[in-house]
Picture 1 (cartoon, rainbow over the protein chains, first blue to last red):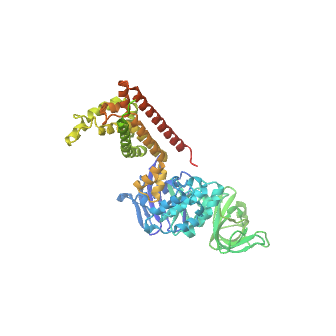
Picture 2 (cartoon, one colour):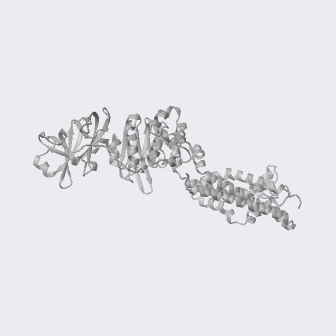
Picture 3 (cartoon, each protein chain N blue to C red):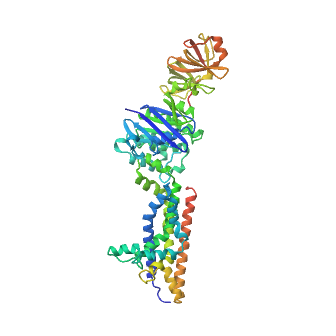
Length: 358
Length: 225
Protein backbone atom coordinates (compact mmCIF):
# COMPACT_ATOMS: atom_id res chain seq x y z
CA UNK A 1 0.00 0.00 0.00
CA UNK A 2 1.38 3.35 -1.00
CA UNK A 3 1.50 6.48 1.07
CA UNK A 4 1.97 6.94 4.77
CA UNK A 5 -0.34 5.77 7.51
CA UNK A 6 0.38 6.50 11.13
CA UNK A 7 -1.22 6.39 14.55
CA UNK A 8 0.99 8.14 17.07
CA UNK A 9 0.89 9.16 20.68
CA UNK A 10 3.42 11.19 22.60
CA UNK A 11 3.29 13.09 25.86
CA UNK A 12 6.04 15.59 26.40
CA UNK A 13 6.43 18.67 28.61
CA UNK A 14 2.68 18.88 29.22
CA UNK A 15 1.88 18.62 25.51
CA UNK A 16 -0.09 15.67 24.23
CA UNK A 17 0.10 14.49 20.65
CA UNK A 18 -2.49 11.97 19.53
CA UNK A 19 -2.72 11.70 15.78
CA UNK A 20 -4.15 9.52 13.07
CA UNK A 21 -2.56 10.35 9.81
CA UNK A 22 -3.26 9.13 6.29
CA UNK A 23 -1.10 10.66 3.57
CA UNK A 24 -1.70 9.78 -0.09
CA UNK A 25 1.11 8.10 -2.03
CA UNK A 26 1.78 11.03 -4.32
CA UNK A 27 1.70 14.80 -4.38
CA UNK A 28 2.28 17.38 -1.66
CA UNK A 29 0.28 17.01 1.54
CA UNK A 30 0.33 20.08 3.77
CA UNK A 31 0.03 19.82 7.53
CA UNK A 32 -1.45 23.18 8.35
CA UNK A 33 -1.96 24.71 11.76
CA UNK A 34 -0.77 27.30 14.21
CA UNK A 35 2.69 27.15 15.77
CA UNK A 36 2.60 24.85 18.76
CA UNK A 37 -0.13 22.65 17.28
CA UNK A 38 2.27 19.71 17.10
CA UNK A 39 3.17 19.69 13.41
CA UNK A 40 6.93 19.60 13.91
CA UNK A 41 6.63 17.03 16.70
CA UNK A 42 4.60 14.84 14.36
CA UNK A 43 7.30 15.00 11.68
CA UNK A 44 9.94 14.17 14.30
CA UNK A 45 7.91 11.15 15.40
CA UNK A 46 7.63 9.97 11.80
CA UNK A 47 11.40 10.37 11.37
CA UNK A 48 12.12 8.34 14.51
CA UNK A 49 13.62 11.34 16.30
CA UNK A 50 11.21 10.98 19.23
CA UNK A 51 12.00 7.56 20.66
CA UNK A 52 9.29 7.93 23.29
CA UNK A 53 6.49 8.21 20.73
CA UNK A 54 4.25 5.15 20.67
CA UNK A 55 2.12 3.83 17.87
CA UNK A 56 2.31 2.47 14.35
CA UNK A 57 3.84 3.88 11.19
CA UNK A 58 3.54 2.29 7.75
CA UNK A 59 5.27 3.91 4.79
CA UNK A 60 4.78 2.58 1.27
CA UNK A 61 3.97 -0.81 2.72
CA UNK A 62 6.99 -0.93 5.05
CA UNK A 63 6.48 -0.92 8.81
CA UNK A 64 8.67 1.71 10.48
CA UNK A 65 7.23 1.42 13.91
CA UNK A 66 4.85 -0.86 15.74
CA UNK A 67 5.10 -0.21 19.45
CA UNK A 68 2.86 -3.11 20.59
CA UNK A 69 5.19 -5.43 18.61
CA UNK A 70 8.22 -3.59 20.08
CA UNK A 71 9.32 -2.61 16.61
CA UNK A 72 11.12 0.70 16.26
CA UNK A 73 13.19 1.26 13.15
CA UNK A 74 15.95 3.78 13.96
CA UNK A 75 16.01 7.03 12.00
CA UNK A 76 18.95 6.08 9.85
CA UNK A 77 17.16 3.02 8.49
CA UNK A 78 13.93 4.84 7.61
CA UNK A 79 13.79 5.67 3.91
CA UNK A 80 13.01 9.34 4.37
CA UNK A 81 14.33 12.74 3.47
CA UNK A 82 14.00 15.43 6.14
CA UNK A 83 14.31 19.14 5.41
CA UNK A 84 14.71 21.07 8.66
CA UNK A 85 13.45 24.59 9.21
CA UNK A 86 17.02 25.86 9.56
CA UNK A 87 18.56 23.58 6.89
CA UNK A 88 21.14 22.09 9.32
CA UNK A 89 23.86 21.73 6.71
CA UNK A 90 27.12 20.39 8.13
CA UNK A 91 29.38 23.43 8.60
CA UNK A 92 32.57 21.34 8.40
CA UNK A 93 31.75 20.16 4.87
CA UNK A 94 31.38 22.07 1.61
CA UNK A 95 28.07 22.07 -0.23
CA UNK A 96 29.35 19.20 -2.33
CA UNK A 97 30.54 17.41 0.81
CA UNK A 98 27.05 17.73 2.27
CA UNK A 99 25.51 16.22 -0.85
CA UNK A 100 28.06 13.41 -1.01
CA UNK A 101 27.39 12.62 2.63
CA UNK A 102 23.79 11.81 1.74
CA UNK A 103 24.61 10.04 -1.51
CA UNK A 104 27.16 7.70 0.11
CA UNK A 105 24.69 6.58 2.72
CA UNK A 106 21.79 5.98 0.36
CA UNK A 107 21.53 2.24 -0.13
CA UNK A 108 21.75 1.27 -3.77
CA UNK A 109 18.13 0.33 -4.25
CA UNK A 110 17.15 3.67 -2.77
CA UNK A 111 19.06 5.81 -5.26
CA UNK A 112 16.26 6.90 -7.52
CA UNK A 113 17.39 10.36 -8.45
CA UNK A 114 20.35 11.34 -10.50
CA UNK A 115 22.54 13.70 -8.48
CA UNK A 116 23.47 15.89 -11.45
CA UNK A 117 19.80 16.33 -12.22
CA UNK A 118 18.92 17.22 -8.63
CA UNK A 119 21.76 19.76 -8.52
CA UNK A 120 20.57 21.33 -11.74
CA UNK A 121 16.92 21.32 -10.76
CA UNK A 122 17.62 23.17 -7.52
CA UNK A 123 20.03 25.57 -9.23
CA UNK A 124 22.97 24.92 -6.89
CA UNK A 125 25.65 23.86 -9.38
CA UNK A 126 27.57 27.11 -8.88
CA UNK A 127 27.55 26.67 -5.08
CA UNK A 128 29.13 23.21 -4.85
CA UNK A 129 32.53 24.37 -3.63
CA UNK A 130 31.27 26.93 -1.14
CA UNK A 131 31.06 26.52 2.59
CA UNK A 132 27.47 26.43 3.91
CA UNK A 133 28.28 29.46 6.05
CA UNK A 134 28.66 31.53 2.91
CA UNK A 135 25.23 30.79 1.48
CA UNK A 136 22.08 32.90 1.69
CA UNK A 137 19.09 31.45 3.54
CA UNK A 138 17.36 30.46 0.32
CA UNK A 139 20.47 28.81 -1.10
CA UNK A 140 20.95 26.90 2.13
CA UNK A 141 17.43 25.48 1.94
CA UNK A 142 17.88 24.47 -1.68
CA UNK A 143 21.05 22.57 -0.75
CA UNK A 144 19.19 21.00 2.18
CA UNK A 145 16.40 19.85 -0.14
CA UNK A 146 18.92 18.42 -2.61
CA UNK A 147 20.73 16.65 0.23
CA UNK A 148 17.47 15.13 1.51
CA UNK A 149 16.52 13.96 -2.00
CA UNK A 150 19.88 12.32 -2.64
CA UNK A 151 19.24 9.78 0.11
CA UNK A 152 16.65 8.37 -2.29
CA UNK A 153 13.78 8.73 0.16
CA UNK A 154 10.41 7.02 -0.05
CA UNK A 155 8.83 10.07 1.55
CA UNK A 156 10.02 13.65 1.91
CA UNK A 157 9.31 15.46 5.19
CA UNK A 158 9.62 19.23 5.06
CA UNK A 159 9.39 21.24 8.27
CA UNK A 160 8.50 24.82 7.41
CA UNK A 161 11.39 25.19 4.99
CA UNK A 162 10.44 28.80 4.31
CA UNK A 163 9.81 29.97 7.87
CA UNK A 164 13.36 31.16 8.51
CA UNK A 165 13.59 33.07 5.21
CA UNK A 166 12.81 36.69 4.38
CA UNK A 167 10.49 37.66 1.52
CA UNK A 168 13.29 37.59 -1.05
CA UNK A 169 14.48 34.19 0.12
CA UNK A 170 10.93 32.84 -0.06
CA UNK A 171 10.44 34.21 -3.57
CA UNK A 172 13.72 32.57 -4.60
CA UNK A 173 12.80 29.13 -3.40
CA UNK A 174 9.07 28.79 -4.10
CA UNK A 175 9.45 28.13 -7.84
CA UNK A 176 11.70 25.17 -6.98
CA UNK A 177 9.20 23.83 -4.51
CA UNK A 178 6.39 24.10 -7.04
CA UNK A 179 8.26 21.66 -9.21
CA UNK A 180 8.15 19.06 -6.43
CA UNK A 181 4.91 17.79 -7.99
CA UNK A 182 6.33 17.13 -11.40
CA UNK A 183 9.79 15.99 -10.30
CA UNK A 184 8.99 13.63 -7.48
CA UNK A 185 7.05 10.43 -7.57
CA UNK A 186 7.14 10.19 -3.77
CA UNK A 187 4.74 11.69 -1.24
CA UNK A 188 5.82 14.98 0.30
CA UNK A 189 4.65 15.99 3.76
CA UNK A 190 4.92 19.75 4.09
CA UNK A 191 4.47 21.49 7.43
CA UNK A 192 3.41 25.12 7.39
CA UNK A 193 1.51 27.76 9.28
CA UNK A 194 1.25 30.09 6.24
CA UNK A 195 -1.90 29.54 4.19
CA UNK A 196 -0.53 31.30 1.09
CA UNK A 197 2.35 28.80 0.98
CA UNK A 198 -0.06 25.91 1.40
CA UNK A 199 -2.41 27.30 -1.28
CA UNK A 200 0.51 27.47 -3.66
CA UNK A 201 2.16 24.11 -3.05
CA UNK A 202 -0.24 21.57 -1.60
CA UNK A 203 -2.49 19.06 -3.29
CA UNK A 204 -3.92 17.72 -0.07
CA UNK A 205 -4.49 19.60 3.15
CA UNK A 206 -4.60 18.22 6.69
CA UNK A 207 -5.47 20.54 9.54
CA UNK A 208 -3.55 20.12 12.79
CA UNK A 209 -4.81 21.50 16.05
CA UNK A 210 -3.81 20.91 19.68
CA UNK A 211 -1.85 17.77 18.89
CA UNK A 212 -4.60 16.22 16.78
CA UNK A 213 -5.29 15.88 13.08
CA UNK A 214 -8.53 17.55 12.08
CA UNK A 215 -10.29 17.78 8.74
CA UNK A 216 -8.41 16.57 5.68
CA UNK A 217 -9.01 16.50 1.94
CA UNK A 218 -8.01 17.84 -1.45
CA UNK A 219 -6.80 21.46 -1.21
CA UNK A 220 -9.54 23.07 -3.33
CA UNK A 221 -12.26 21.27 -1.35
CA UNK A 222 -10.72 22.22 1.99
CA UNK A 223 -10.31 25.90 1.14
CA UNK A 224 -13.98 26.17 0.21
CA UNK A 225 -15.45 24.19 3.08
CA UNK A 226 -17.82 26.43 4.97
CA UNK A 227 -17.70 24.31 8.13
CA UNK A 228 -14.00 25.15 8.62
CA UNK A 229 -12.42 28.46 9.59
CA UNK A 230 -10.51 28.39 6.29
CA UNK A 231 -13.73 29.13 4.36
CA UNK A 232 -14.52 32.24 6.37
CA UNK A 233 -13.29 35.78 6.86
CA UNK A 234 -11.93 38.45 4.55
CA UNK A 235 -8.90 36.32 3.57
CA UNK A 236 -10.93 33.32 2.40
CA UNK A 237 -10.68 32.33 -1.23
CA UNK A 238 -10.63 29.43 -3.63
CA UNK A 239 -7.82 28.03 -5.77
CA UNK A 240 -8.31 26.77 -9.29
CA UNK A 241 -5.79 24.72 -11.30
CA UNK A 242 -5.42 26.00 -14.84
CA UNK A 243 -3.38 25.67 -18.02
CA UNK A 244 -2.13 28.62 -20.08
CA UNK A 245 -3.83 28.57 -23.51
CA UNK A 246 -2.57 31.82 -25.03
CA UNK A 247 -0.74 35.01 -24.20
CA UNK A 248 -1.80 38.47 -25.35
CA UNK A 249 1.21 40.75 -25.33
CA UNK A 250 -0.69 43.75 -26.68
CA UNK A 251 -2.93 44.00 -23.63
CA UNK A 252 -0.47 42.15 -21.37
CA UNK A 253 -2.93 39.41 -20.54
CA UNK A 254 -2.73 35.64 -20.16
CA UNK A 255 -5.61 33.35 -21.06
CA UNK A 256 -6.08 30.25 -18.99
CA UNK A 257 -8.28 27.21 -19.31
CA UNK A 258 -9.98 25.94 -16.16
CA UNK A 259 -12.86 23.63 -15.31
CA UNK A 260 -14.96 26.74 -14.66
CA UNK A 261 -14.27 28.09 -18.17
CA UNK A 262 -11.70 30.47 -19.62
CA UNK A 263 -9.93 32.80 -17.18
CA UNK A 264 -8.13 36.02 -18.04
CA UNK A 265 -5.13 36.96 -15.94
CA UNK A 266 -3.19 40.23 -16.01
CA UNK A 267 0.50 39.98 -17.04
CA UNK A 268 2.16 37.80 -19.64
CA UNK A 269 5.05 36.11 -17.84
CA UNK A 270 3.81 32.54 -18.31
CA UNK A 271 4.38 30.23 -21.28
CA UNK A 272 1.64 28.52 -23.27
CA UNK A 273 0.96 25.03 -21.96
CA UNK A 274 2.26 25.81 -18.46
CA UNK A 275 0.19 24.60 -15.52
CA UNK A 276 -0.53 27.24 -12.95
CA UNK A 277 -2.75 27.69 -9.95
CA UNK A 278 -4.78 30.85 -9.47
CA UNK A 279 -6.44 32.18 -6.40
CA UNK A 280 -9.83 33.88 -6.42
CA UNK A 281 -10.56 35.76 -3.22
CA UNK A 282 -14.12 35.43 -1.94
CA UNK A 283 -14.43 39.19 -1.49
CA UNK A 284 -13.70 39.73 -5.22
CA UNK A 285 -16.62 37.62 -6.41
CA UNK A 286 -20.07 39.20 -7.06
CA UNK A 287 -23.20 37.24 -7.92
CA UNK A 288 -25.88 38.01 -10.54
CA UNK A 289 -29.03 36.09 -11.38
CA UNK A 290 -28.82 36.73 -15.14
CA UNK A 291 -25.80 36.89 -17.42
CA UNK A 292 -24.47 40.44 -17.30
CA UNK A 293 -24.51 42.72 -20.35
CA UNK A 294 -21.44 44.75 -21.27
CA UNK A 295 -19.16 44.92 -18.25
CA UNK A 296 -15.56 45.73 -17.49
CA UNK A 297 -15.25 42.47 -15.58
CA UNK A 298 -13.48 39.97 -17.81
CA UNK A 299 -13.96 36.83 -15.74
CA UNK A 300 -17.45 35.49 -15.34
CA UNK A 301 -18.64 31.97 -14.78
CA UNK A 302 -21.96 30.18 -14.75
CA UNK A 303 -22.23 28.43 -11.40
CA UNK A 304 -24.57 26.67 -9.01
CA UNK A 305 -24.88 27.51 -5.33
CA UNK A 306 -23.91 24.43 -3.31
CA UNK A 307 -23.71 25.83 0.19
CA UNK A 308 -24.16 29.02 2.21
CA UNK A 309 -23.16 30.07 5.70
CA UNK A 310 -23.24 33.30 7.69
CA UNK A 311 -19.88 35.00 7.82
CA UNK A 312 -20.08 37.58 10.56
CA UNK A 313 -23.23 39.64 11.26
CA UNK A 314 -23.45 41.37 7.87
CA UNK A 315 -22.04 38.87 5.42
CA UNK A 316 -22.72 35.49 3.90
CA UNK A 317 -20.21 33.11 2.37
CA UNK A 318 -21.61 31.40 -0.70
CA UNK A 319 -19.96 28.27 -2.08
CA UNK A 320 -20.30 27.80 -5.82
CA UNK A 321 -19.70 24.94 -8.20
CA UNK A 322 -18.57 26.23 -11.59
CA UNK A 323 -18.05 23.26 -13.89
CA UNK A 324 -16.42 21.31 -11.06
CA UNK A 325 -14.25 24.18 -9.81
CA UNK A 326 -15.24 25.34 -6.34
CA UNK A 327 -15.47 29.09 -5.76
CA UNK A 328 -16.37 31.21 -2.76
CA UNK A 329 -18.30 34.49 -2.90
CA UNK A 330 -18.51 36.76 0.10
CA UNK A 331 -21.61 38.96 -0.23
CA UNK A 332 -23.82 40.89 2.18
CA UNK A 333 -26.75 39.22 3.87
CA UNK A 334 -28.90 41.98 2.41
CA UNK A 335 -27.91 41.02 -1.16
CA UNK A 336 -28.62 37.39 -0.41
CA UNK A 337 -32.06 38.37 0.81
CA UNK A 338 -32.82 40.67 -2.12
CA UNK A 339 -31.73 38.12 -4.73
CA UNK A 340 -33.44 35.30 -2.86
CA UNK A 341 -30.33 33.13 -3.10
CA UNK A 342 -30.71 29.51 -2.06
CA UNK A 343 -28.89 26.23 -2.43
CA UNK A 344 -29.23 24.71 -5.90
CA UNK A 345 -29.86 28.05 -7.66
CA UNK A 346 -28.01 28.84 -10.88
CA UNK A 347 -26.15 32.16 -10.74
CA UNK A 348 -23.46 34.08 -12.57
CA UNK A 349 -20.27 34.82 -10.72
CA UNK A 350 -18.37 37.97 -11.67
CA UNK A 351 -14.75 37.88 -10.58
CA UNK A 352 -13.13 41.27 -10.22
CA UNK A 353 -9.62 39.98 -9.73
CA UNK A 354 -7.71 36.76 -10.27
CA UNK A 355 -4.20 36.34 -8.98
CA UNK A 356 -1.48 33.77 -9.37
CA UNK A 357 -1.04 31.98 -6.10
CA UNK A 358 2.03 33.09 -4.17
CA UNK B 1 78.79 23.22 33.49
CA UNK B 2 78.52 19.48 32.88
CA UNK B 3 76.49 17.86 30.13
CA UNK B 4 72.84 17.79 31.37
CA UNK B 5 71.33 14.36 31.87
CA UNK B 6 68.58 14.05 29.24
CA UNK B 7 66.89 10.96 30.68
CA UNK B 8 64.32 12.93 32.73
CA UNK B 9 63.32 14.83 29.58
CA UNK B 10 62.64 11.65 27.60
CA UNK B 11 60.77 10.03 30.47
CA UNK B 12 58.65 13.15 30.84
CA UNK B 13 57.79 13.30 27.13
CA UNK B 14 57.06 9.57 26.97
CA UNK B 15 54.84 9.81 30.03
CA UNK B 16 52.96 12.84 28.68
CA UNK B 17 52.45 11.27 25.25
CA UNK B 18 51.28 7.93 26.68
CA UNK B 19 48.97 9.64 29.17
CA UNK B 20 47.46 11.82 26.43
CA UNK B 21 46.81 8.78 24.25
CA UNK B 22 45.20 6.87 27.11
CA UNK B 23 43.09 9.90 28.06
CA UNK B 24 41.90 10.29 24.49
CA UNK B 25 40.70 6.68 24.46
CA UNK B 26 39.05 6.80 27.89
CA UNK B 27 38.08 10.47 28.10
CA UNK B 28 36.24 10.70 24.77
CA UNK B 29 33.52 8.15 25.52
CA UNK B 30 33.25 9.49 29.07
CA UNK B 31 32.85 13.08 27.83
CA UNK B 32 30.35 11.94 25.18
CA UNK B 33 28.30 10.17 27.82
CA UNK B 34 28.44 13.16 30.20
CA UNK B 35 27.42 15.56 27.41
CA UNK B 36 24.37 13.55 26.41
CA UNK B 37 23.06 11.60 29.35
CA UNK B 38 20.15 12.64 31.50
CA UNK B 39 20.98 10.00 34.10
CA UNK B 40 20.90 11.15 37.72
CA UNK B 41 24.34 9.71 38.35
CA UNK B 42 25.80 12.26 35.97
CA UNK B 43 26.61 14.89 38.59
CA UNK B 44 28.40 12.33 40.72
CA UNK B 45 30.56 11.29 37.78
CA UNK B 46 31.20 14.94 36.92
CA UNK B 47 32.34 15.57 40.49
CA UNK B 48 34.62 12.54 40.43
CA UNK B 49 36.18 13.69 37.15
CA UNK B 50 36.77 17.18 38.58
CA UNK B 51 38.21 15.87 41.88
CA UNK B 52 41.90 16.06 40.80
CA UNK B 53 41.41 19.82 40.24
CA UNK B 54 40.97 20.45 43.96
CA UNK B 55 42.58 17.47 45.67
CA UNK B 56 46.22 17.87 46.77
CA UNK B 57 48.26 15.65 44.43
CA UNK B 58 49.77 13.98 47.47
CA UNK B 59 46.33 12.69 48.50
CA UNK B 60 45.71 11.16 45.11
CA UNK B 61 49.26 9.83 45.06
CA UNK B 62 48.91 8.34 48.53
CA UNK B 63 45.75 6.40 47.71
CA UNK B 64 47.24 5.25 44.43
CA UNK B 65 50.36 4.07 46.21
CA UNK B 66 48.21 1.99 48.54
CA UNK B 67 46.06 0.66 45.69
CA UNK B 68 48.98 -0.20 43.43
CA UNK B 69 51.17 -1.61 46.19
CA UNK B 70 51.42 -5.36 46.89
CA UNK B 71 48.58 -5.31 49.43
CA UNK B 72 46.28 -2.95 47.51
CA UNK B 73 43.41 -4.10 45.31
CA UNK B 74 45.15 -3.31 42.02
CA UNK B 75 48.58 -4.43 43.13
CA UNK B 76 47.08 -7.61 44.56
CA UNK B 77 45.37 -8.29 41.26
CA UNK B 78 48.49 -7.74 39.14
CA UNK B 79 50.45 -9.97 41.50
CA UNK B 80 47.78 -12.67 41.40
CA UNK B 81 48.05 -12.58 37.62
CA UNK B 82 51.75 -13.14 37.93
CA UNK B 83 52.76 -9.56 37.12
CA UNK B 84 54.76 -7.06 39.08
CA UNK B 85 53.21 -4.49 41.37
CA UNK B 86 52.87 -1.19 39.61
CA UNK B 87 54.11 1.22 42.24
CA UNK B 88 57.48 2.74 41.35
CA UNK B 89 57.12 1.73 37.67
CA UNK B 90 56.47 3.68 34.50
CA UNK B 91 53.08 1.99 34.11
CA UNK B 92 52.21 3.16 37.59
CA UNK B 93 53.15 6.68 36.56
CA UNK B 94 50.84 6.45 33.53
CA UNK B 95 47.93 5.32 35.71
CA UNK B 96 48.54 8.15 38.17
CA UNK B 97 48.93 10.78 35.45
CA UNK B 98 45.80 9.59 33.66
CA UNK B 99 43.70 10.05 36.78
CA UNK B 100 45.39 13.32 37.66
CA UNK B 101 44.91 14.86 34.19
CA UNK B 102 41.43 13.40 33.61
CA UNK B 103 39.52 16.69 34.04
CA UNK B 104 41.85 18.47 31.64
CA UNK B 105 40.87 16.08 28.87
CA UNK B 106 37.24 15.36 29.75
CA UNK B 107 36.03 18.88 30.44
CA UNK B 108 36.99 20.52 27.10
CA UNK B 109 35.60 17.51 25.24
CA UNK B 110 32.37 17.55 27.19
CA UNK B 111 31.91 21.28 26.55
CA UNK B 112 32.62 20.79 22.84
CA UNK B 113 30.11 17.92 22.55
CA UNK B 114 27.50 19.93 24.44
CA UNK B 115 28.03 22.90 22.12
CA UNK B 116 27.31 20.75 19.07
CA UNK B 117 23.95 19.75 20.49
CA UNK B 118 21.61 17.09 19.25
CA UNK B 119 20.47 18.62 15.97
CA UNK B 120 23.42 18.06 13.57
CA UNK B 121 23.41 14.44 14.73
CA UNK B 122 19.69 14.18 14.03
CA UNK B 123 20.30 15.59 10.56
CA UNK B 124 22.99 12.95 10.03
CA UNK B 125 20.59 10.23 11.21
CA UNK B 126 17.95 11.30 8.68
CA UNK B 127 20.66 11.06 6.01
CA UNK B 128 21.21 7.41 6.85
CA UNK B 129 24.17 7.62 9.24
CA UNK B 130 24.18 5.12 12.12
CA UNK B 131 25.36 6.01 15.66
CA UNK B 132 29.10 5.32 15.19
CA UNK B 133 29.06 6.87 11.73
CA UNK B 134 27.42 10.02 13.16
CA UNK B 135 29.96 10.20 15.94
CA UNK B 136 33.02 10.00 13.71
CA UNK B 137 31.74 12.00 10.72
CA UNK B 138 29.82 14.75 12.53
CA UNK B 139 30.57 14.93 16.26
CA UNK B 140 34.35 14.52 16.04
CA UNK B 141 34.95 17.06 13.23
CA UNK B 142 32.62 19.58 14.88
CA UNK B 143 34.39 19.07 18.23
CA UNK B 144 37.81 19.46 16.60
CA UNK B 145 38.80 22.38 18.78
CA UNK B 146 37.69 20.56 21.89
CA UNK B 147 39.96 17.67 20.94
CA UNK B 148 42.89 20.02 20.36
CA UNK B 149 42.35 21.71 23.73
CA UNK B 150 41.95 18.40 25.52
CA UNK B 151 45.10 16.94 24.01
CA UNK B 152 47.34 19.93 24.61
CA UNK B 153 46.06 20.49 28.15
CA UNK B 154 46.39 16.82 29.09
CA UNK B 155 49.91 16.71 27.66
CA UNK B 156 51.04 19.95 29.30
CA UNK B 157 49.45 19.13 32.62
CA UNK B 158 51.19 15.76 32.71
CA UNK B 159 54.53 17.44 31.96
CA UNK B 160 53.94 19.76 34.91
CA UNK B 161 52.89 17.26 37.57
CA UNK B 162 55.00 16.65 40.63
CA UNK B 163 53.17 15.41 43.68
CA UNK B 164 51.51 12.32 42.27
CA UNK B 165 54.69 11.28 40.49
CA UNK B 166 56.79 11.65 43.59
CA UNK B 167 54.31 9.62 45.65
CA UNK B 168 53.84 6.66 43.33
CA UNK B 169 56.88 6.79 41.05
CA UNK B 170 59.47 7.54 43.61
CA UNK B 171 62.47 9.14 42.08
CA UNK B 172 64.34 6.45 40.21
CA UNK B 173 66.73 8.08 37.75
CA UNK B 174 66.39 6.68 34.26
CA UNK B 175 63.11 4.92 35.09
CA UNK B 176 60.62 7.13 36.86
CA UNK B 177 62.46 10.38 37.40
CA UNK B 178 60.63 13.09 35.42
CA UNK B 179 61.72 16.70 34.90
CA UNK B 180 59.79 18.33 37.72
CA UNK B 181 61.25 15.84 40.17
CA UNK B 182 64.72 16.17 38.65
CA UNK B 183 64.58 19.94 39.24
CA UNK B 184 63.68 19.32 42.87
CA UNK B 185 66.70 17.02 43.12
CA UNK B 186 68.99 19.57 41.44
CA UNK B 187 68.00 22.21 43.96
CA UNK B 188 68.47 19.83 46.88
CA UNK B 189 71.95 19.10 45.50
CA UNK B 190 72.58 22.87 45.01
CA UNK B 191 73.06 22.26 41.26
CA UNK B 192 71.39 25.55 40.35
CA UNK B 193 72.69 25.54 36.76
CA UNK B 194 70.79 22.35 35.90
CA UNK B 195 67.74 23.55 37.83
CA UNK B 196 67.81 26.82 35.88
CA UNK B 197 68.03 25.05 32.57
CA UNK B 198 65.09 22.70 33.11
CA UNK B 199 62.98 25.30 34.88
CA UNK B 200 63.38 27.75 32.04
CA UNK B 201 62.59 25.02 29.51
CA UNK B 202 59.38 24.08 31.34
CA UNK B 203 58.37 27.73 31.72
CA UNK B 204 58.72 28.43 28.01
CA UNK B 205 57.00 25.17 27.09
CA UNK B 206 54.00 25.86 29.35
CA UNK B 207 53.68 29.39 28.05
CA UNK B 208 53.71 28.24 24.43
CA UNK B 209 51.14 25.52 25.08
CA UNK B 210 48.73 27.90 26.82
CA UNK B 211 49.13 30.49 24.06
CA UNK B 212 48.27 27.77 21.59
CA UNK B 213 45.20 26.64 23.53
CA UNK B 214 43.85 30.17 23.95
CA UNK B 215 44.29 30.94 20.29
CA UNK B 216 42.39 27.74 19.43
CA UNK B 217 39.60 28.74 21.81
CA UNK B 218 39.50 32.18 20.31
CA UNK B 219 39.10 30.75 16.82
CA UNK B 220 36.35 28.54 18.21
CA UNK B 221 34.40 31.53 19.49
CA UNK B 222 34.74 33.82 16.49
CA UNK B 223 32.84 32.66 13.40
CA UNK B 224 34.88 31.40 10.47
CA UNK B 225 35.55 33.43 7.31
